[in-house]
Length: 226
Image 1 (spheres, helix red, strand yellow):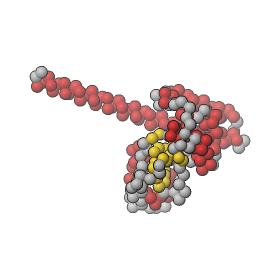
Image 2 (cartoon, helix red, strand yellow):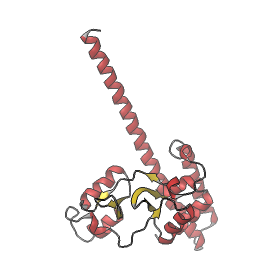
Image 3 (cartoon, helix red, strand yellow):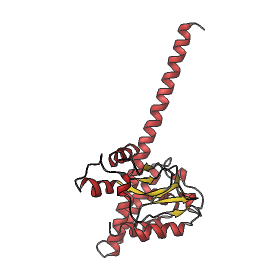
Image 4 (cartoon, one colour):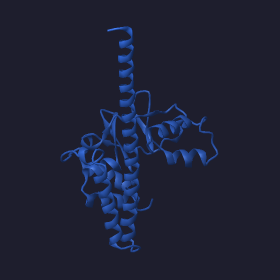
């Protein structure tokens, strides 16, 4: 093979790798958009359930919201339907592992950039020992930092950690997970094993593992006073 042939082969491989990377990037963007749309539909479902419960709307609104959620699930089978596991028993079976943390000594500005880059609404707060110290949400940043006139570049993430830390053990059953999330009206619950963070359970994880009736009940309780 001549030098020219080798150069052409290398260029062809580089193009192939670039095209593959671009395809993966587009797929990731589509998945993030699907997740955000599903979160929006879950919120609308919760609002419809609460409106019906309080007598401000009919059951038809709940049916319509469930239909929209079902249609969205069918529209993105690679994101939702094909990932639905068998019957889950414990928190570790339904959580998404590998949750990225923000350090207690990082600035709120750095946390906001991480939240933006990851396309998420919150980040676990971890110490140097990788143990959970709390959860930082995008709302915390707005309400506890920006709205108070504080400089995000001068405020530490640890300063915004909640006084009450909510979590569930990896061996807890789904009933305990739902009990925690519904009673405290939280949409994300850290999962701990051997005193370390091993994953997060979000409303999207529940949506993959609950039937529509139980999902609607969960959403109604969590969004009831949101």
